[in-house]
Image (cartoon, rainbow over all chains, first blue to last red):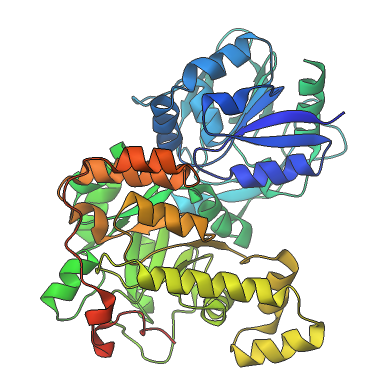
Length: 192
Length: 299
């Protein structure tokens, strides 16, 4: 049975996430307002500009409903800007969801010319390394109790975390053809 | 649990990828750090740093060049969102200077006075990605062939009249629809006709869309203009003079951001359009002489 997965569609590469979900047994639903969240089994917060998405999330009063979705045990996954929005602390004032007890550093690698691609081992993902695209990417500088580190760069920098059914990645699986992370997320949503 | 891959920077994926992150957003022209902060607070997905907004370039006349590096550095220091900057068409040294400043995207722009009347910058050789203007599919694919990682309509900058942006977006979208139904031999002839690289014509036909992100630009002045461009298939909007030449830039900027996100919700576009104050005064494109049109620049 196809499962409805919300993709926050305020700004950013939500269409790319939708296309990945479309390749799996999932029905992507673009979420711009509260009513779009009815019946979704999980939510993806895409890449984009976290300040833009955060402001619109506040403007349309989506923060409460997203936090309620997490409290109801539904999986939520943030990629890049989505990771920033799920954090507790990003070192500056901007609207956040405070879903993951992590400290995030924005634009941690520098400007666009420091953006890069590399292969990562990710805990729980079998079948070889995962090709990861980092664009003006944030990283996780500290994790609180209960937050599991799923992947690090060679220098130890944390780039993927999990707490229960909440996930955050610094990179963009939606920009590669590799559906393994999306598939795992869809399966979790189906059984949540 | 260790990564074992080599790191590759400045790849096509990474260059085009930043534009993908800007989709559904508004990129605003700013001339000072203060304007950049206003734009960021209003929800801009990026800012374009320049010396003068297009309406002033038009009014002042003279040669329009790359912005003062000092100004670009001030704008970079003021915001966390990406900072783009414009270089003149063909002026590869201005482009190198902008790259050395660490701008996130370079707009090789017809809004500035062209530095070369035959050649565009060979953009593929740069680490920083480029966006370029286009009026039709052939022009867009020529720029992508040179290495542009994002395109936008030219529209007619600094006028507040959206008619040219509409003309260019409709043309591009119509041509993209046409090539999807062409046979391989027809694509070959069509590529010759529109003077575009064959491989990119084939790629666009196969994808059924532009191979890179495609924004609207040039004359967008109201939330309804922004929503109109999205309805015509734009991936997002550049707004130049339309914001900081209006009566209440912060309010108008927020409204244009909201209309770009909710472009199919006309009740919301109506709501955000209420009491925005004076829009930029504007110049009807039909009143411009051909030599006053900026969109004709670029080859």
